[in-house]
Image 1 (tube, rainbow, N blue to C red):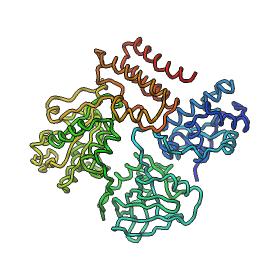
Image 2 (cartoon, helix red, strand yellow; image 1 turned 135 degrees about the horizontal axis):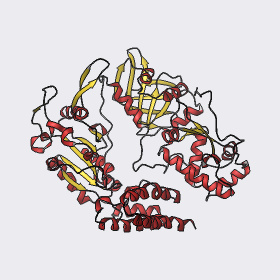
Image 3 (cartoon, rainbow, N blue to C red; image 1 turned 90 degrees about the vertical axis):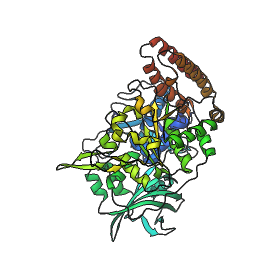
Image 4 (cartoon, rainbow, N blue to C red; image 1 turned 60 degrees about the vertical axis):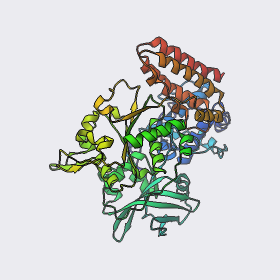
Length: 569
C-alpha cells in the first residue's frame, strides 16, 4: 500500500479556502469549451483515470508529455475558472480551485501531489469524456515517445507461458480482468520496452523485451536480451537504482511504468553476461519515411549520406529547434535500412566529460580503484564483432566538452584513412583501433554563447552540415496546412519575419534563428498550446538573445503576444 507521512496535510484546508462551486456549477463549467479546452479535459481525464490523486511527475510518467505540461495546463485552466466565477486567486496557488495540494512523501515521485476537489471529481463523472483521449496528440516532445515498463513474472495476475517462436517470443496471459491491470494493459503500446524479472529454477531471470502485440487479453513480448542472476527488485532499491516509490507500486501492481532514466539505470546496473541474444526486431526505414518525418530536401540528405560514408564523421550544426537530434537518429536508421537501435549509441557531452568516461579510466571502489572501459571503447568492441554491419555513435552537444581531451590518443584514429590502424592505449597498454564500420554523428547548438567552437585540429576530421529552420519546406507546409490553424499561420508569419531580423543582426546571425520543431509533433494545435510555446519557449530565448537590447525584445514580445490576444477576442 502507498505509505503516507503521519503529519501529511492537504492544503488549503476547507476553513482556509473553499471554491464554493457546486457539482452542477462544475458540470456547467466543464461543458464550456472556452474554459475547459480539450487539453484541459484531457488533464482532468488523466487525473480521474489515475484515481484522483497524483503529482505532475506521476502524470507524466503515466501518460507522457512533461511534468510542466500538466502544471501549465492546470494553471491556465484555474485562471479561466476563477475569471468565469469572478473570484480572487486562492491562497498559495491558483490551482487550489481545482485541487487540494500536499508535499509528496519520500515514497512518491514528484514534489507536490494534487487531489481533485470533491465536487469537481463528482462532476467529471457526469460529463462524457469518451471522445477525449488519454494519450493522443498529448505529446510535447517532437518525437513519438516510447514508454518503458517493469514486469514482475511472479505475480498471480499473470501466467507465464513460454511460446517459442524462433526461441524469442513469450506471452503473458491474464487470469482475470481486474480494473487496474486492465487499465495498464490499455496503456502499454507496441514498440514499448519492458524489463522483466521472474524466479525460475536456475535463478532470477532478467529480460529486456520489446512489446510486439497488444490486445484485450494478452501482450506479446519479443525478448532482446536476457540474463540469469541473483539480482532482485529489492537489491536494485537498496543500491539506489530503483526508486523506492516504484517498488511500493510493485507491491500492488504487476506492470509498472518507468521513466526512461530509471529504465536505463536498471539495465546499466545489471552488467551480466548474456546467456542468449536473439536478433533485434527490425522495422524497415526507407528514404521516403525519412523525407516524411524530417523536413529536409532529398538532395541534401543524399549529400549527407555520401559524405558520412566517405568521411565517417559529420557534425550537424544549427540553432535550437531545427531537429538536429531527431535528424541524426534517422540518418543512422536510413543507412541501416531499419530502426535498429541496437546499432546506435547516444551520449551527451558536458564540460566535465572526460577521457576516463569515454575511453577508459580508474573508478573508485569501497577499497581502492578498478580500471573500467568507457562507452566509446565498448561500442568500438561491439562494432568490431559485427564487421558487416554499420554502427553509429551519436554525440549531442559535441562542443561542450574538450573534445581533444576526451578522445585522447584516439583522435588520429577517427580519420577515415586511419580506421583499423592500431594505437597503444595509455591506461593499459592495449593495442586498440576504431573500426571502419563505425560512424560518428556530432551535433552543435550554434546559439549557445557559453561554449566555444571546436578547434581546427578536430574540425578537419569532421564534415559540417548546417540545419536551418524549414518553415518554407514542402514537408512543413503540408504539415501546417493539415493543422488548419489560422492562429498558427499568423504566428509563423511573425516567426519568419523574426528570423529575418535575427539573421541581419550583427551580434546574432543565422545561427540564432528560431527552429521549426517548436511547432511540430502535433496532429491538432490549439490556443493553449501555442500560447505555451510562445511564453515558455520562444520569449525566454529572445530574452537571452537580446539581453543587452531590451527595446528589441519587448517589441517582439508585444507583437507575438498581440497575435495571441487578438485570437482570444
